[in-house]
Length: 117
Image 1 (cartoon, rainbow, N blue to C red):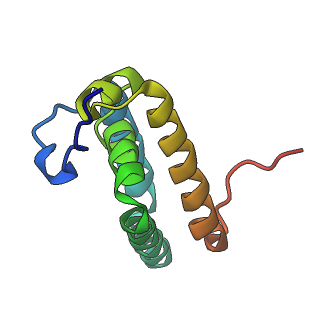
Image 2 (cartoon, rainbow, N blue to C red):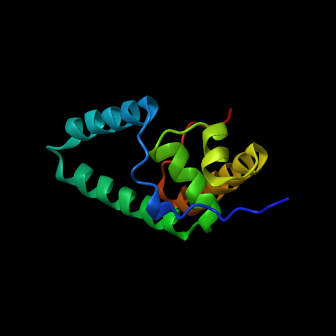
């Protein structure tokens, strides 16, 4: 069984973004527009964005690749599997691990998401 090298994420920007990524961007732009006039919100947003960027950059390469292909480029797990030449199960595992690490890294921001009641 031949092994394939993981794709270098820097060589992937030419990949088209999918509709879900575009919708996510539009929603973020809309939220940003609502808070633009508030300097405190602007500072908070920049701090959060910077923390997220640092947390993503700190992920192991394989997890970072899967996360970026899914969330930034909007690819489905099967598509990511083909792009990286890895099984879908590995894509799922890497995504789960990446999300868990991001949650841990970012939990101090006070935006933990919906409560589990």
